Length: 320
Ligand code: MEV
Image 1: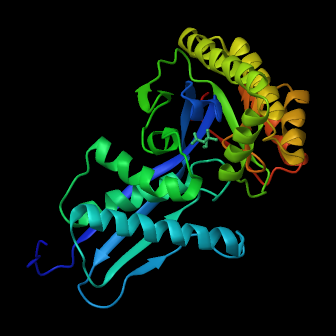
Image 2 (image 1 turned 90 degrees about the vertical axis):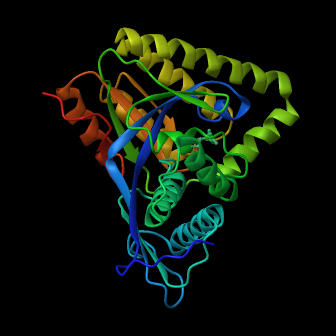
């Protein structure tokens, strides 16, 4: 164990953000490709102080009036695990370590909140000990927490919540994705807690029940992601939107949609979205809509709010 003789208490901070999967969730768990964008407007920050006295303190960041006690408890548990695993990795066992997490990412909505919490804590704790984690080290620490949260995480969220640009993820590897012109994406929250681990189990159960049908759906989702990569590279958002629509139908057939998601997808399409689908694990949580212009963005946003969305966030930087 290292000792620290500095006068000031060691401090460290780490930042991550939400992510949105535009194509390929669930299919990615079977080794197929997926495309994800960072949601930089939904940031999360962990701050760590090591005082050397007292117990471990973790301050959860979601106020009880906004979130259910269940999700707050889950975030607390995941934060504890992230802290313990990082300290174990660093071979440190301090007394008096305080972790404060603050941010706007709603938990359990398919926006990568658990990976973002784990990534920010791992980075903040390491920095408090003067260590900058490598990309691989941070990935492994986040995955150790994600395994508790989701069972068999593909690793997509671990990268997508830390990389600053869009990524292409396949078989455990994330690469920057070339995008000719930034798509206008809106993420809308049903306000209903999603269940990624349960959704992944359901897809697995459906696969065991009817392998040819599910394999055909997963293969189609894989092809959609491949072709969407080309659409993004060529800036063809109309073609991209059509692929998002079909991807949503596949996810529905896989049994991971939910009525509130269907309502938001329909509302955005009726209001002129080029494409719309659920995003993340499903069974609640969020959907993502692609719009073609600033004007359509206002119309679709209003339609989503009228259809019951609790929040709508733009994914892209402000464009004029
Ligand atoms: C969760 O954000 C996305 C899923 O594909 C699960 C995973 O990739 O581990 C449903």
